[in-house]
Image (cartoon, rainbow, N blue to C red; front, top):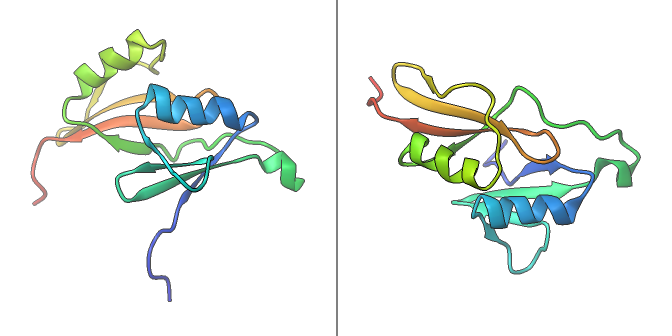
Length: 119
């Protein structure tokens, strides 16, 4: 029986660049015991190189990690000042706002804020 989600794998071709992006640019917490693991709340993101294990590198597409923020527009501006390019305008889905972007390897990410309560 599945008990929980242990980590989310983040494929990369350059683990040092990926770690710098997730820690320095996005501000996630580095793991003290594993140099290529970072924490987003209770979720571990594990940076790994598929090619080191004989697998082709492919960025994670169309499964955006929804990074919760208090204010999507303010967070977007902060990341744009750090050189992040967003994919189109901020989306207002009627219950939440989303701003889509990618990491340096092309993995899909989004800033997300739910502003309407769940029914």
